[in-house]
Image (cartoon, rainbow, N blue to C red):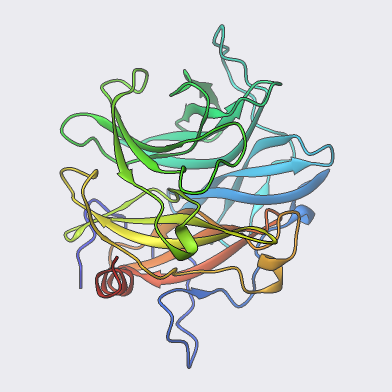
Length: 329
């Protein structure tokens, strides 16, 4: 079994065995979706949210689009990662930073580094100039706003869970104000000595053919293994009926994650079920966070479905590494 590095034992994480007859590397939770607008007061939709272990429970930061479609960030807690209590009131920061307004937030990722939880999300002003916002919390009760990581336009900020070569590392996807043009949405590497000043930007991964021809972007916090960083990401395909979002996987060098060792030619999860193909934005699976049990290698992937609900899928470190190596571009 591939070894999970710096991982946690999560004996109570959500899990279902692979269904009989399933030959795919990732399989869905039979009770999907696990979260919807019904789980938060005044919501139009609840999706693209991030979950992390917290003590012997779980905490999360959730994207809620209100009925006026303003996206805001809310916290939630759970004992089992399946049944959630979502706070009806959005996050309010304990501080303000002059010149860095917080008007809205969406598609949050949460990453623990040395006992502190960093929240990375797509932020902007009323002009809807998207970039990457940041905050931190130690207890999911009080949240402290940080400087934005980059200039507009940028999305899909994903922090690595430890320093690499004594620097914090983030992946992002520079973009235009909208959804870009085919082939122009790539994943980039950036590093920082202090979580404020980011530089040494390097191209990591460009769009490829098929399900990832239009653009690619980061997903959950990468999982460190003795085979390399296991990264789940999303890819986008353009069709005559709009954009379709899929999930794929890659293995990156542990000491230099700009080096892509393997990358899936085929998707690992596609919009197929009705809650993935029908909603505010049809035909979307958007992986945002993943729980990984270091003892067994089990992985639970939380993903947004059709920009409307939260779904859950399962795999293992061994399964995903094997599939990625055997089906690499």
